[in-house]
Image (cartoon, rainbow, N blue to C red; front, side, top):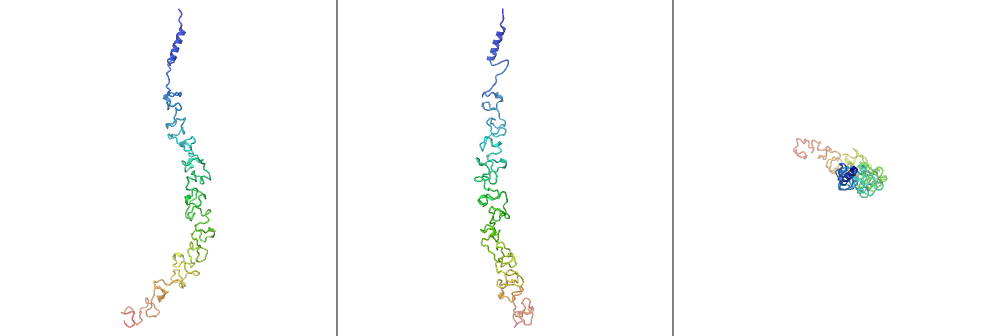
Length: 302
């Protein structure tokens, strides 16, 4: 009797194939049919995704930043590169590191015309200080002038945003050009110059030119053409004794009532002997000293 061994082996082999088990191999679980075993597939129900390198819940195939955790998937400029890994988030041509408006307007490119100071903020809609001088454009008469300077009383006298040294032709904003202004840094639209020395009163420390500073001159806008000294300004108050000063010794008694208008220690001379009553020991000249005279101002009694 012949035994058909090969035929029996074929039958057993076919049975194993039909049962899904060939020599001990187990059946693979792959719910989404993407060829990745479910146990190794981060997205077992999504045939388009299986890996999440940055663990942000978004598969690598659709993640705008594969290696940077960015679950929100923000992409301000819509360039397909997420903001979390985009060095130029708003797509204006400036890197975020140098862009003061990195999350600002999109659809434009930074340049001299659109971004005068190159700070990444669009001049027309984002930047309120186009030349970056610290003066807001609304108050800046030179909003596209000199760049990156620091306005101060010494560099921008009238605070108009124009640098005095090379931008501003009227540093005190008085309507008179610096080239014609007798006080370049002092507001004086009328150009008053009392003593005619070429320096306007607004910036002249001695407006009347009498040699005394206005701070110490009680007649700083008074007579001109003279110089204060002891012969014409007895009390040194800046008021010329003849014509301006009605109290030449500044003792509080008007010259017209002062027997000694040039002596601040004396004002009267009761007995008319030329000696002021403060110095005169016998004011009524009756031969008795004031000290022993019960009536020092009555020559008929003592």
